[in-house]
Length: 73
Image (cartoon, rainbow, N blue to C red; front, side, top):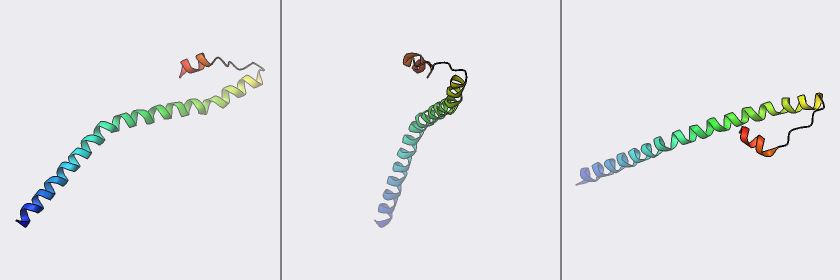
């Protein structure tokens, strides 16, 4: 009788682990994609100060067209 309980508990743990693994595998690509997007945006932000400096040096006004900026993202 005790062996049956141990086997049932082990089977329950295996099912829980399989469920968790399946959930992680379905969730992981979405998170990795989000991280790649954040890295890309961080790269754009990193370059932004250089572009601003270039505009100040040549005394050009900054292009503050929000729609154009958002379209580049």
